[in-house]
Amino acid sequence: MFQDKLNISHPIMMGVVNVTPDSFSDGGNFIQTDKAIDHALRLSEEGASILDVGGESTRPNAEPVSVQEELDRVIPVIEALAKQTNTLISIDTRHADVMRSAVKVGAGFINDVNALQNNSSGLKFIAEEKLPVCLMHMQNTPQDMQENPIYEDVIQEVFEFLSERIRICVEAGISKDLICADVGIGFGKTLEHNLTLLKNIEIFHGLGVPLLLGVSRKRFIEKISGSVSPQKRLGGSIASALYGFQKGVKIFRVHDVEETKQAFQVFQAIQKSS
Image (cartoon, rainbow, N blue to C red; front, side, top):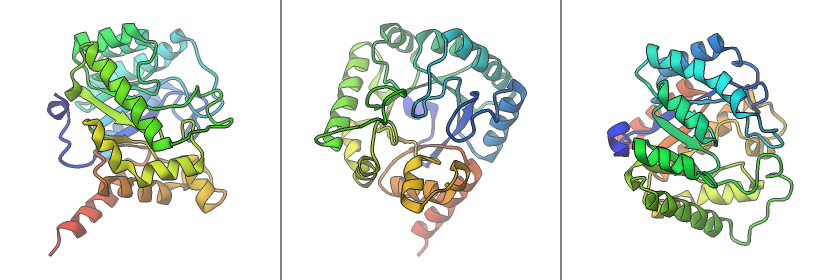
């Protein structure tokens, strides 16, 4: 059960570990294995309950990498982390071969921005291994998702997509109790699409699974506040996360674990005070 893997009675921090040269926020900072391991361990110490290790950038206009290159990036990191921490390790990938190899060396969570579309092998593997999985909505692909995203009703269309993906996963043998969903802020959405999804995020509780929210350092913050680098979007990241938490979101994918955890602690203390 998802609740057996994670205590979702309090906000869960999923720390971002990008083992890539071109991720939008920290591309290249942790491409070396030792630096990625140190970064992940630091996130764990700061309070991350999940370490999300990815070897393929899915930023706008990112080019895909070969499965072998993705494996070369992430497997040494996951293998080392599994020996050094009890923190749940997530593999952020769209590819079944990477999922299998990552789980073999210690990953225990699958985070797929493609929601396991066109991936019958991945569906079967996750069902057999009884792994928790996050399904995310993305319009088109990273290469073209921001060219001209159009929706007649972004809430309805994202909800229907995720509902259908959950149904397909359950039919493939994945327990619904092991699924969480991500509306995909910044993935094939304009600023208005992102804001509409965030404002109405509670509607997605109707999916019947925990929600994961990835707003950390996203470009929509820059569009609201003015031209700032990804590293200077902490305030907007925390504001968005707190709004999601107030609306019942359980899991937050973040770059700044320590600061986000502190914000939640203060927010909850205020809520509980008399």
